[in-house]
Image (tube, rainbow, N blue to C red; front, side):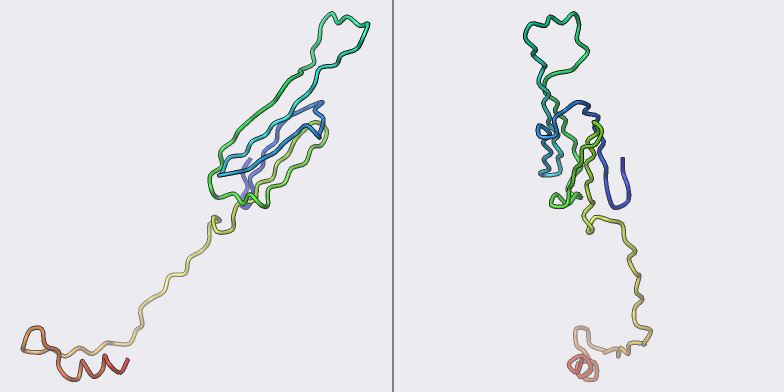
Length: 127
């Protein structure tokens, strides 16, 4: 999910131990990893199991506009939410358009090519 100043990632990771969840951001790539161990109960024989066990890993590329020092993550009710602030330098911004000075510039023509008149040289050296 994209916002103007933030990008968001929501990953459904039900039943994961929050301590096994790892979030890394480097070179514009977000890496999410987690692991859930299988339940081993002695003297129990499972007929079927609908419970995922194993490792989870996802990599998402965001580019260089994410500020990696400001990335944060929360895990609540089986959903990992990662907030990725967009670097302020990457946000769209209004650029003001200036106009040149409205003062006329005096230029004196010389009859010889390559030579300036003395009044032009004097004016340029005084600025």
